[in-house]
Image (cartoon, rainbow over all chains, first blue to last red; front, top):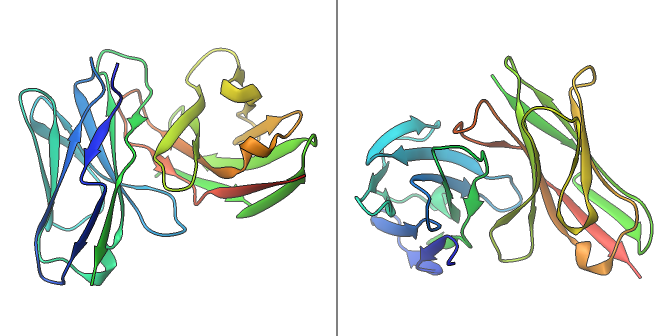
Length: 113
Length: 113
């Protein structure tokens, strides 16, 4: 049973560019959440998708947007990249029917130069 | 608003010694509490969770934590540290089963031979 997968593993972008990160949830999960983890910090919640809609959102600007597909996979898009967007981006999946746990993927390391 | 405070950004113990990582939370509603572990260059792995019921919860790898409502604490312990326990540990709180996770800043555990 595959866990949460994310692609790509690493990414280097230039300020002002746009980036798309991808996530496939654990089998049987229907909810996907995205977190940003800056170096030396705990993860911070960006947003959560359920039934292809954004259900919750953290304190992140509109430059951060997302999408969930019918197969429950998800994308995180960041426009007009800033140096401060450099971080590890973590995707977590869970099942809306209970269980409480969020299972995390290995993350995508984004470096903005 | 919910928040998590982890006391001690870095804890060092000897192999075989007791591990105690401290976590205090604030929440306006009954919290769901979690401990996650992160090994270098990896995502987060769930160690244990408290939702309702028994306040002493046991997790993987010999870790356990006790929910103390009066002290708003959820400290993580392990009777005997192993070299493989060296990692970063994050305490997190959420408002419900599908609520977003709010993380502490993490505690890096070092284990000396």
